[in-house]
Length: 224
Image 1: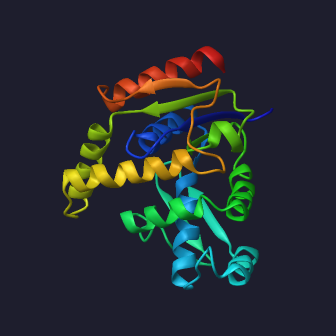
Image 2 (image 1 turned 135 degrees about the vertical axis):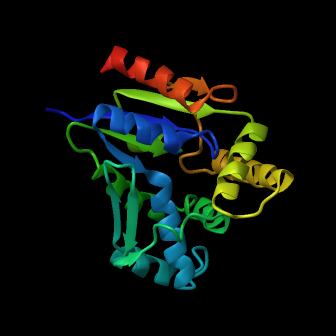
């Protein structure tokens, strides 16, 4: 049986991760959060004090020896180990997210991480969320989604997430950070953030999580 593939792309704050995990659990599929891989590599570079643009020799050495172990459990838990060091909680902050945007511009990094991503294609299927899942990594996907939302709504969601984690933040700064990341992601030369030509666009601005989930699962049921 050939595994089915569902891709869910979009910018930060549209709810990709939450929805993708729910969809994966609903269909009994595996789940891949591609952003976690970029964050993990970015943090590993930072810890080794490697400048991706200047320290090319050290950067290539790191790529050759790094082992990123990404595991998704059916209870929705994700664990990430880099060279046997747990990174799961370390990568969940805005500084690492910014570093990941820089790593995402590098072709060598993308090629290495793409191999890891494609290794997650396993029966009965895979739900992958990110920024180029449908346009580059899994172009053969059975169904592709691209989630959008206003930057104000995305910042509001991020603010609530941070508050839940006990982290202080303010809405104007979060809006600026999201706009900065949007610009970096959409304007990069390699695999920019754009909807796949055959992707279904879902605007989540005025939809609840359950409404987005229902909308997506209905479309999946029609096609696979």
